[in-house]
Picture 1 (cartoon, rainbow, N blue to C red):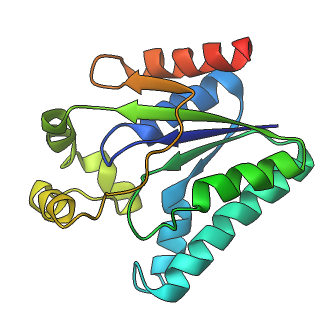
Picture 2: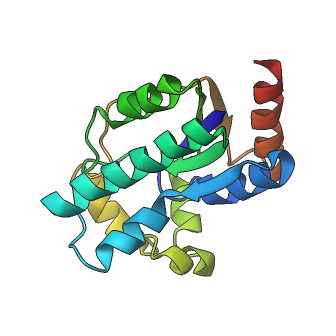
Length: 175
């Protein structure tokens, strides 16, 4: 079982690359906004119950997938409402049942992130679509997070989603 942990800032292309990677590998795509949207229907984003349940839900899905030998692609936007120990706990949960984690950092220049922000496709999952709000959150430190491991780093400004997914698939095949 593999957990491909795609991480990067809002607008870096995690879901788009994840979809391409899913088509190449057949791995299931577990987009982080599925849990966010579910919990926001009841709890305010960032509230204590929201934060606790979101991490519990993510980890429970990883655990059950690992137990069942079901490989996943997970999209993760590092931000301050996620506990700093979550990535390590995710790896522990996956490894406990024989799974492996491939840490993939998606990077993109700030100007390109802002250009992508208002894209209509981002509205589907209630993603951040306002450049002004993105700037406010960034300046307030909302996206500050301890550095995440990168077994592979891909610049999504210079690589298409298909090229990025092929790089990830090649890394999986080589490991």
